[in-house]
Amino acid sequence: MIASSASLLTHPWVTRACKGLYENKTFKVLGVEVLGINLPRTTIVRTVDEAIDAGVNEFGNTIGFFGGVFGGGFLLDKLLKSWKIPLHPRADIISQGRVLKSFGLIPPLVAFMMAMPFFRNAFTAKRSGTLDFKDLISKNDSIRKKHSSQSPDAQTQAAIQRYTQIGLSILAGGFALAAAGVLWARFGLFKPKQAFTLAKPFNNPAFQKILKAICLTGKKATEFDDLRAVFYWGIPAYISWMLASRDKFEVKEQFLKMINFIAVYVLTDKVVSKFFDRKTAQHAKTVPGVYDKVGSSLKFSYAKAATLSKTMGSKVQKVIRFENLKLLTGLGMTVSLMAVLPALLNIYLTRQRLERAQAEERLQKEEHMRIVQQRMLALKRRQLVEAMLKAQQANQRLEKFPTPGYARY
Image (cartoon, rainbow, N blue to C red):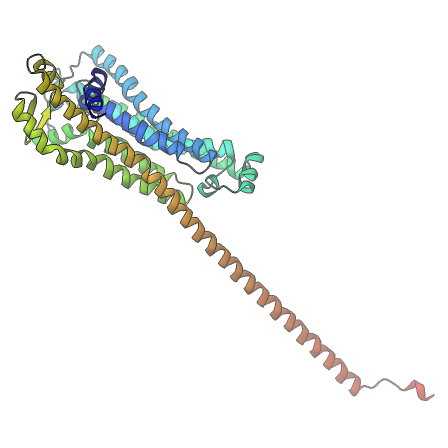
């Protein structure tokens, strides 16, 4: 079993997949997003309505984001070619092509992330008539039938229109900002016909650091490292999900998901690296040349490993097996922690909150009924007292002005 697992870790397909995940952060982000977020959030749910609602939001986000990255990147590459603007493959070198492409991609992607939950709300309201999250996750048949059997009323129609307008406005703002950024990068940020020299007053070290931090990575400026994935994807998405929340229960669920996403996504790789660091240093001594020194850390090179395996077969295969295991361990931890933990925790916590809210609502109703009964009792007492007073006054009038005694005649 152990031998088969070891051979599986060095299988060409596994190594090829690990190489793609290791060298292309965007594919890693896609894998974590689909496996660790999209699928669990559409399967670990309380109702079918919630599954559809979550599916529209989750897969809509992923398809829109990566469609924007690759589709928008393709269009911007055409634009760079027509303008004859170069894009340097190294992200640490500021080039007009990388800046222009980053400015053209980032605002629409962020805008799409922030607009998607409002479109989701409009879709769910139109499909099910549900405007509250607590009704969406309710297993009460009467509540679901009430929403599904009725055509959208005036309030629901107004909500659908409002959600749609908000989403479209956010998208329009993102594309307008992208157009302004592209034009600035083309005509104002760099010196004329000098694609690697910033114009004044932007040619100072501080602004260059900011520009490098903003721009996307990768040879074609379409890749997202962990930090950029968090800031350009995670945080905008989760903030908008909280802003688009339909009640306080959904706000709390989305907030927990955001904290979990940031903690797991950023810290998992660091925890795994610390765990494997000692073994990495040993392999670097055993097979020199298979690691590149990057600052104070060692970066594994699949290309160099493939070259060295021709002369140092078994030793290099052992290193490849170790690096594949390290990568898959980190990915597995990320997926499992992002997949099951927040979903189950949210289901439990929201159930507790709903039970408390329902108990408080019952107490409020009971208190209201008690007050109403007391007021009705007080009203009846007052009416009884008033009736008694009227009768007493009538008797006093009769005594003062007695009725003539016709019976005597």
